[in-house]
Image (cartoon, rainbow, N blue to C red; front, top):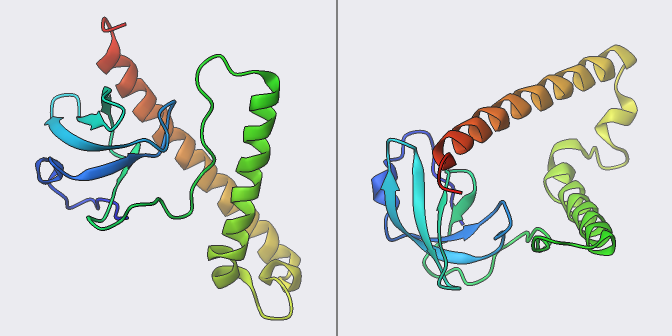
Length: 158
């Protein structure tokens, strides 16, 4: 699975196989049929014969020979979920997070006999935590930008 970088040409993604990584259709596979530069959205034809507009970041491009999504997030319940379905999703989501601890986190934070944060000076730990909070704020601002763009793009369509 590949993710487009900042230097990509969105028109080059037309015809690419993708998997949806956000929203109510998460996990569904499809093919990019078009790109609309004015709204910065892609038209994706899903295997379920649904067409949808989506933004970069809401899908990942599949390698041509890739059949399954690696590191699957739990399947997102459809609209109208029960409290139990939401609880099951939260549980599966947390389990997925633990796979990150044992994967990427192992590489970045394991010191072999302990975790990096366990041996950090307290000032370093606070600085690290403050930087993580700043990262969360930046991600929130980026998400806010995309949500506002999506709202504007969908005005009058629903």
